[in-house]
Length: 432
Figure 1 (cartoon, one colour):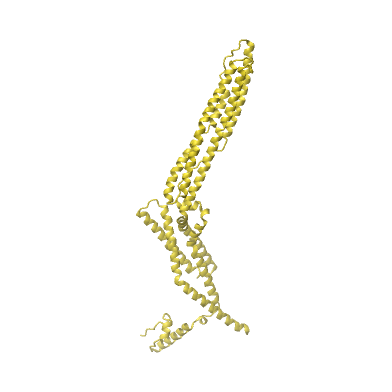
Figure 2: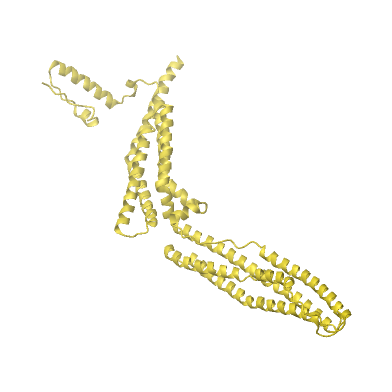
């Protein structure tokens, strides 16, 4: 008996709970459509800004195309979420809910593809382009420093050349005093040593002339980099700055190429190879066979030493040539929409805001679905007559009385209070 008494009370609580939720939904529906429209229009405005940044022409036709696209986006978002807000909470079967969830996921992807990335471009497009400029400056700086490092390493070969030249000059001085072949003077051995020391002196002088050019190119490159950095953070439209940035990037690329060409490592390598291969042997000028034999023996020893020094010099030049070349850096102009995608990880808040303004109604759909489910649960197992309100009951009694009176052929006017409370429930009967 207690269970029987508790069951009607439980049903009454369920009815009151459902009625309360229905009242809240009725109030929320008064502005839900307006709120959804505002979100759709806001998304359309940002979409217009994003589309405008992609169009090269600023004429009337381009403006009309951007407006048409943004309007289509706003209408599409409004219609799509209106469908979801109405249909998803109303379906009850699992199959229908899964189908609508799939449709919602597909529609959300379409909205992101046609609107959200353009919204992100409008929110963070200029900052993304500036990020691209900053990344390009870093790349050019790395290439410039690498080319300068290689050029300086090549200039360092001047010391190796000077050391070899000095060794041949010292040997020639020893030969002049008779310390090598035993024949003092400037004979055949002396001329061979002087021949090679002169070649190395010319190479040394040629390397020395490159040093000011290398330093000047590096200083000029740093000046261009400073200007490019200033353009990156300078106030004003980023499009105009990008044009000047591109011009400076072309100058810097040419300067890096010139700096690479200033490397004397290939020249030193060829000179080292020719050092021992191209020896002009003078005529032996010894007065006796014994002295000429001594000269020939000394020249052979000199040639061996020459080959060793040439191999050492060639190895040093090859070490410089083996250094990794600077990376090829080319500045590619980029639109704000492409930049915001390329550097999306740096603009996560902008992407979150751009997506949220388009997909926020999905949260409303789930809230409405949960509420409708709670209403159905509150009314579950309750007969229709238990859910009638007093006004609906009075209207039902009135309708039965009208039907009874109509069957008797007597016209009856309904009470005014019933008409005021439920005008849609009272329909006057027409009598023939």
